[in-house]
Image (spheres, rainbow, N blue to C red):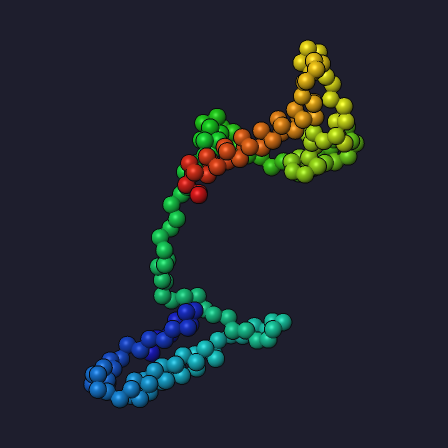
Length: 173
């Protein structure tokens, strides 16, 4: 009998008794062969080296003897985004940058991006927006804070559209 304890598998290369695979054969004979094979597998399994852990004794399985192929084929490499192609042609390499950056206006470290980011255009951060002569001083001109908010929302919408196009082009959605 041969064992591959990594997969908890036992194989018996000896031929089955004659007539065992016939349809009218008593299934107790087949069960007897299966019980002997499982008993031999359990005997081998009990002889494995054991390691103590916080949940009790654990047996360590040996490396596999039979190397099984993958169930599914390897995933295809995704297409690079336009930025990745551009960065490759220009030789631009990604470098690690710290998440926090010191902000001179507020005199504290703030996140480089996200909520409370360094360049956040909030009334707390920029309470005064200077009016441009000839642009903001006529009656009916848009509020400067509204203009800043609309510009920020337009940037966010443009970024979402570009991200969606990149995902479609890269085949990720």
